[in-house]
Length: 306
Image 1: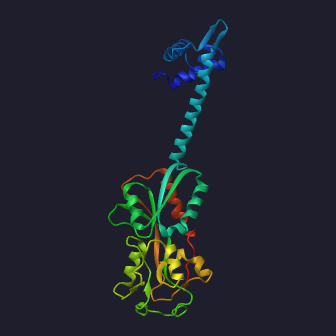
Image 2: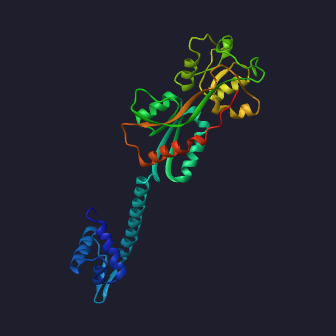
Image 3: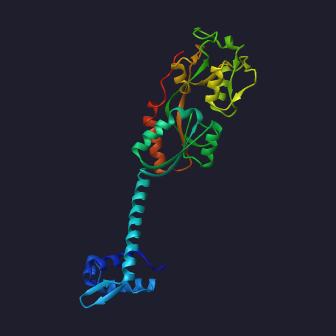
């Protein structure tokens, strides 16, 4: 069966349709002798007689009818293969894995949904993790495109701005500093702070913002691994926290949290679309990156003012 080719299948179908070797040869732009040799080669390859020969033409045997059914399946598979490859080449199909830092989960699903409405044949996988995990996935090739706020310095990357990323200091609505204007960082030195885990972008930003300012961790020494846990802990009165404004829009709107008016806040950073500069992006990944840069800014929640 290794010697069976698509030219053999083409000959089988042409003769079955025409009912005549001469007419099939004309349709295929071949000589009857060349087509006869091709049919003979096919029958020898499968070890079966596929046509009965008559003075008036050729007719499929039962084996030939079965072979023709299978040939139609093969031809459809080849058409599907061609369509799929063309779609992949155009960025309309193929597989794509996108990674994002956990803070981005508050808007990236809407971005992805909008992208997939324009490219429904793309098989897209979405991975969420803290910054270290997301960058490690980009480094290891597990993802092609990353959405994060701080590009890596030890990896050759292309970066494209997606939109602003503000950070605010949140407290429960009955906090003594709620509604107090013009606070300084030093005013917060006696407050209990709830802090994200090491390796998160928020933790790095927290340490850069407060610098040498004396702060007091929450009584239980909490380092929390998710924004949701931090929000719940702040609402419970366990402390205050620096957090992405994208994560607390609903709680501020309903009065469950407030933003403190502290000097230098909100800190506004930038969301980036990041990919490896030393690797060729797949067409689907390039299409997603272009879409995210062009349309991504309309998906994060609006900036919250203290």
